[in-house]
Length: 552
Image 1 (cartoon, rainbow, N blue to C red):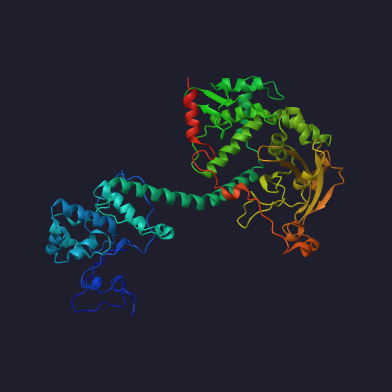
Image 2 (tube, rainbow, N blue to C red):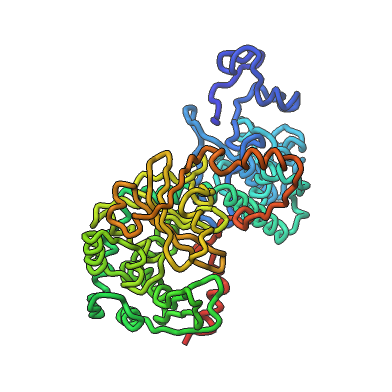
């Protein structure tokens, strides 16, 4: 979009090679005879027209104004926002007490043409703008400035631009006439409402894709490092040394000592915001924890997760990827404190030498949950034992909740590579374990897959969201180091072949296909967008009100 610097002499036809070739239609042609009246003038092509997508709305109009344009020379390729230009013309005209008729008479145009210019509907010519500038007694550069002349004018521009964009068209809402009769508070409300609708729609469309991308990148990072992070191990080692931890399981007293060492006091309350595990008052050095814990919860974990974020210097997440990274780092450091590297590796090496590696033994030795022990095993197995491994957490509905692998196992995924929420094969250990009556003992199984044979151990654990299976597995070549390798349980998975477990058997299909109509129970995750905000899933208002109630 540029100022045309070559004028067409009266009576001379435009050069077809410059106008797009024979038969090419100009903007003036499309707009009809009225817009072709000044075909002998040089064209100032606008940067923003009604046919183009709108610029992203700005919800704050108090931004610093852009520097004024200089007068374009013959070689300049400058663009002009016709909406802002129109408001500047109107502002200067009314400031001089001129009517539309007055300005039209001064430049030899009808008042209706001036109105079209002021409303951003007319594509102005350079010569016309020079005439307007002369009539208003201002330099041409004053008309071409980027910023609107007033806050109200800026709001009018935002609303006009929004109404010409695809969002308003898709919503099929009536257009609002933007003029002096529209109150300023109503104008501002409309602009803010439009911007918020745009933000929500953009977020809704972008967040799932962003989350898939962020999860994929994070899994790739973890796989590349064998899920082992030396800097986090060093943080844990330093904290344990600071409180004189003698080794072995970290006691609740030792956990409290770590918090005290970092300058925090502990406060157990009954009204902790329901969306949080803990709340840290950084100003007063107080950590608030729930007064009552469920039987399956480890009272040390919530406290260690709170201090881990402080130790690692986490700031407000910039995006969803940053949020996921911080969560992984927090959980890693917490596990590294509960199962210190030196003691854990010594126990694992001894167990490997005796060919009795077991996640259950690791859980019992350090008094942690099975899931924590399983996670910690994936941190250390490859780096210290040379054993590739995979981890899965699967909901009772069969959907994959969490996963990690560096042993070549192929998790179910969608076409974009996302694994979260994907259905796990019914033949895999993580699914079969739900049908095992014995929930006290671990379940072991070999599974033949398209990528090889794997041995897995799995347990079922309860939660407010339902039951989950937590599984750890290794390739067949490494099973000789594990307790449970003697199991006779074996299954074959042909997934992603739909005939494996996603299609009903032929006999059942023949009997019931077309003769039944199930009413599906929608999963909550299909109805709700991913949580938003600086701390996804946390109600900031609730947290701040809580802090107000408890601040000393």
